[in-house]
Amino acid sequence: MATLNNEVKAFIVQALACFDTPSQVSAAVREEFGIEVPRQKCEAHDPTKRAGRDLAKRWVTLFEDTRKRFREETADIPIANRAYRLRAMNRFVERAEKTKNIGLAMQILEQAAKEAGDMYVNRQKKADADDEPVVPTAVSVHVIDARKRDAEPERSPG
Image (cartoon, rainbow, N blue to C red):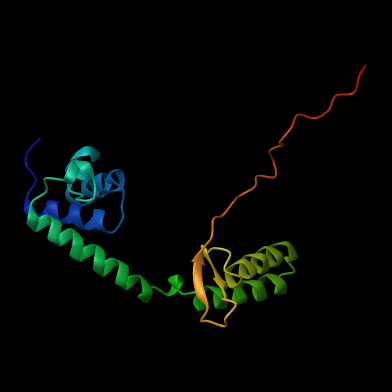
């Protein structure tokens, strides 16, 4: 395999900084540049991984800058905003009700209740007894799979 030019390396580093997996990056390089790059070689351009520990300073700086910008720009994406998602769900519920699709409307309403009730946020508010300010605290989440049974069913003799 030939060495990669700087344009391809920059593409790989920036894609990895945007949390694409090495497999996704490998496929994107094949599509964008027509070059086969194994996922292991892509992973070597991620300074957060062991394979990328010896990455040149230039690429580490590009990675860090891109990741920082990516995280900051997430706020500019409408769907990342709770109010936007709730407004969209409201439109969907109204459309489902007009078409008499009550099942879909109920699913959307349940989703909206989860969204509004912080079900997808891993924190809860806790007030101190001395009326100190409300402080978010971490919460562990325990998921119960209703399809699994804890014990074997009892068998009737006979």
